[in-house]
Image (cartoon, rainbow, N blue to C red; front, top):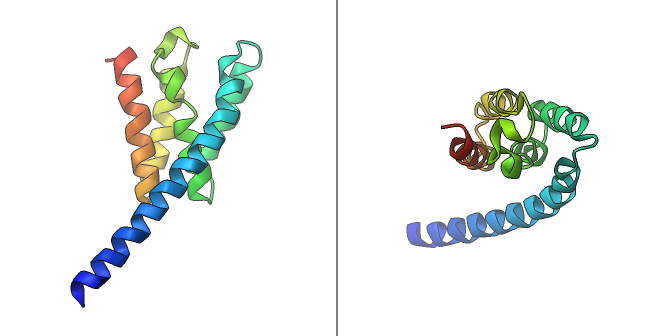
Length: 116
């Protein structure tokens, strides 16, 4: 019976990961286009950073993952970006949700390339 529960749990985790991945791809595709533009970038960054305290896991996760492409460019992308990303991560990292934790790790990995 124990192995049956483990198989069921593994299938559930796989389904959750697939759903999270699809959700992140849709959400990041929409927000990355806003962040790729020079005009209005500061406003978009500020709005996304506010999502760090959202009630939903997906919005908190998106507050991190939306910055992955910009994080790889560091301060060259926008002055003060590193500070904003670290503030977002410092808030989201306290979530007990695994998907929030992996989002923080992903954006920090990209940031470490530009800001070692």
